Length: 184
Image 1: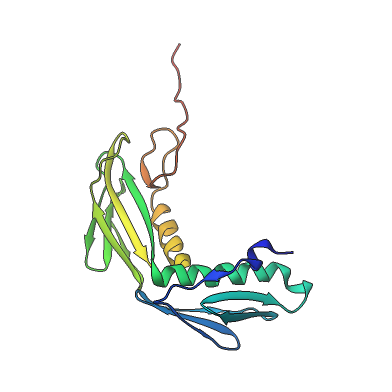
Image 2: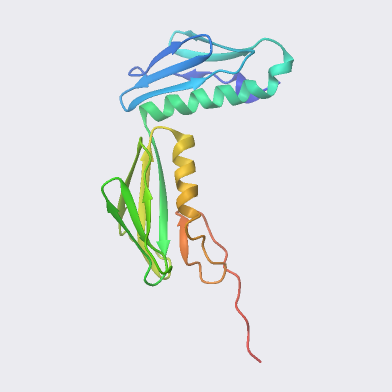
C-alpha cells in the first residue's frame, strides 16, 4: 500500500490541469509543466482534487512517485521553488552577468556557470553568522527537479572543505567541521 500515492492533491483555483493518456499538463500563473505518467497509473480530477490510482499491486512503487511528481508540478506553477547557496571563503565571490554566474573560487581561473532556461538567480550579501561568509546565491524556478540539479552542479564547482568550510554550500544545512591537527 502506498501512503503517498493515496494522498489527494488539492488544486488551487488559478491552476489548470489537463490529463492526457501518458502525461499530466499543469498550467498556472508562474508557467506550464508537463509530467509524464508511468504505465499502470491513472489520474482523476474531480471537484478541484486530483487523485492517483493504480491498475494493480504491480505498480505500487510507481504510484507514490507519479503522485509526488504531479504534486511538485502543481506547487511549482502556483508558488515556485527557491534554493539558497552560500559562498564561503576569503577571496571567493560570485557575480551575476546576464544568464550566467561568474565564480572566483580559489582556482587559477574564473568559472562561468550558464543558467538553464526556467531558472533565475540573484546574488546578494545577507546577514549570516558563518565565518568567511561572502555572498548568497538565490536560485528560483518552477521545476523542482531542474532547480535541484542546478544547485547540485553549483555545489560541485567547489565542495565545502571539511576543516574550514570554504566552498559553495547549501544555506540552512548545518555543517560539522572536523578539528584540525593539535600540536604537542
